[in-house]
Image (cartoon, rainbow, N blue to C red; front, side, top):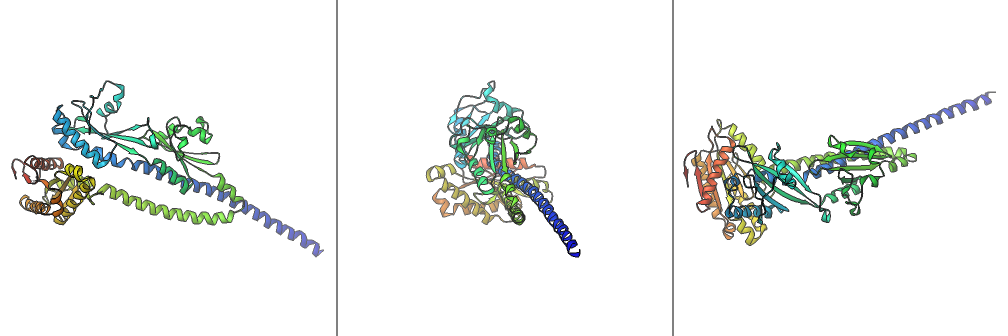
Length: 479
């Protein structure tokens, strides 16, 4: 009897153990599947963020260039004069910018004349009554400093051209015209391809109707619809809703993220499939847990490192001029405003100097020599000006330095710098000289006012024959 009772008890225990193991196995698989799906979603979100950020980053340089051009007060001195001399000055100015930046196009349109100036001269005036001039008329009452226009008609070599139009305001802050640059972007396809191979995430850039504009497969571009490629009815996913905020949607084991790119008026669609990973869980639940745990750890470490490096690059891009390795105009303007606010506690002088004959050097010796000359001048400036003095590059061939000394002492330092430039053998070989304008900031000055006065002093040095220093006070000047 005892033997007969042992068998049912053992069977019950075995049944309970097997049941618990099956339950645990099923529960584990469900949890792992859920975690896997969440992990896929997180990877997709991260990839989407990285792609979107890289696309946005492509806009930074042309935005900065157009805004800096719009802030060039020298344009206001002659752009309203609809003469042959104005056309020649504009062509020379725009040619220098185009050569320095390599942009597809560079242009200026004064509102007073509506002449379309470009490096080749000028075309017919802009007809603001025409529907084709929407890109100009939209800027007249625009509250933002710049806007975008994208060439969607010609995607030759799978590239596109983005135009950034920035408002020119006169000295009273009124609309005075626009400046613009057109940048040709050629590697969006490479960005999408890299994430397909590295992360297993497929991405499309499509228009409002779902037509593919950018994809790693050339045969899809302008020939295929995103909806057809993914076999999704258009009513199941309205990509236009992402104009308000990004859309996240799971359809048939595929996780999608859609986000509107306002600068292009296109849409970034990122997709990753969950079917392959979830199917393998039936046989490798324990292994998948370990792999996922390690994978998540690696992804977090790599992501944190990538974000840290990206932040450093953003800070460097925002503050440093990468040609001369000195501060750029953005950080200069911040420093200038801080110095003006603190003028009662610490006086300073502002000097502007630029490289004479940069265009001649570029044309005769090449842009590499022109770039080398600019870098050499920056190196010599760093030798002369030390903290708390602050030197930066504020334009193509223009530099600014804030000198925390009285005007007489500041002029002595600028003369030392001027002599150092003129005695440099490399600069003598290319006839590289500098024209300098210097002024002292008064307590009543704004940053704009002191900059304008230093700019006027520089302008006088240029007009007097270049290669000299002009000191300009509130009402007098000396050379």
